[in-house]
Length: 229
Image 1 (cartoon, one colour):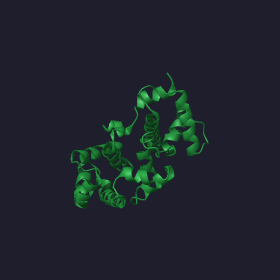
Image 2: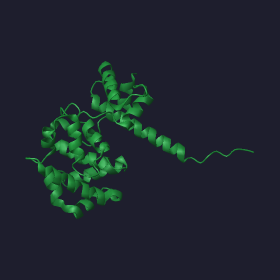
Image 3: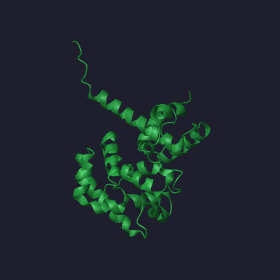
Image 4: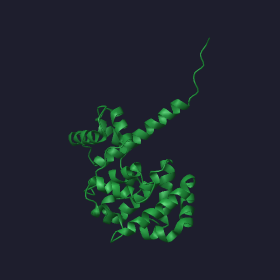
């Protein structure tokens, strides 16, 4: 079996799709995905981030207006319900700052932000400037699954995905992130997987990278073997 097909069969693809979101369906799904990306962007387990996202979704709290209407205390409560307690205060503040920053646009939304950006790098800059704590990892999580949907969504390959692609034999070592992305896109063009798109491959590589990281952490946590004198 080809490497890419095997990766996608084992690691699935889009994180957004796993949450039940169709990013092609319109602005609402993309706003929901942005909330999820903010939650996934913290150093917290994916299970807790997904659970917390579903708490917000069930409460109908994901649009700028809905998040601002909740206020800080209610946001903390929702975060705690999802198990996000370790980062509840910081994340509640971040969400309020993000939604307040979106008010600068004529129609306060991520779609307006994207339309106002002059290109891919400007889009990333605008997203990072929404609030302290919206860093490169969160922006990459959000934009990589919008590749091919938003014309200006074109982030570099993340370090985690690049390391996984090298380990899987899909990339040579020593490329910079942009070179790695272009090389992987060319590989995808010659080895596409039916029913998936390139964003699914990126997500599968991130999942593989997370598995490899966990395995390494387990190895490092093992007590050293006793040696006989």
